[in-house]
Image (cartoon, rainbow, N blue to C red; front, side, top):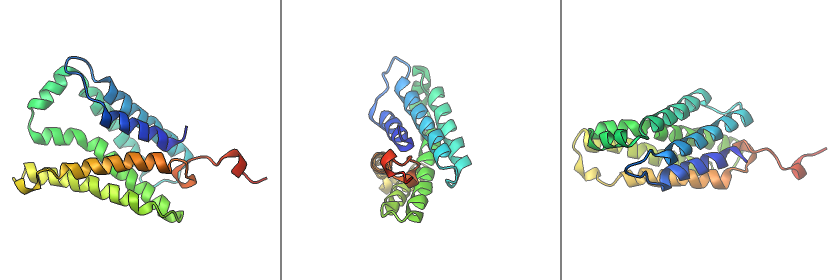
Length: 182
């Protein structure tokens, strides 16, 4: 399977599954593990990808946070925690997605693909939501209520772009057997 397909499936599992109240959240951990597998495959298929080390660290950190927050007691603690702690717990995953968008948008534009600007749009949406959350909770700018939906739209766009662009050669996909010239 192509690297971006792994990432799309992993993100979809994380976004579209809800944790049971009394059981360990296996779906979040599994989704982050699929994203990490996709990242490792992408890094091997496209060794010249920008921000490679940063993306690797963020993928591992997102998996570590998902594992740490998977028990019900940890999720209960997070529900009662300060909003800044909740925000900080989402940073590794959102940082990975925004950085991945930047790296893939750059690769798409360098390859002449018209989809490059969609990656930058998803990156901007995620970054706007991350910054807006700080301003909403920290600075008390209540007029920013609901801006988090922009970030969710950015994450959904990342899933869609990974699924649609996963077979592109610039996205780390191997060329099909009939595309190889003798």
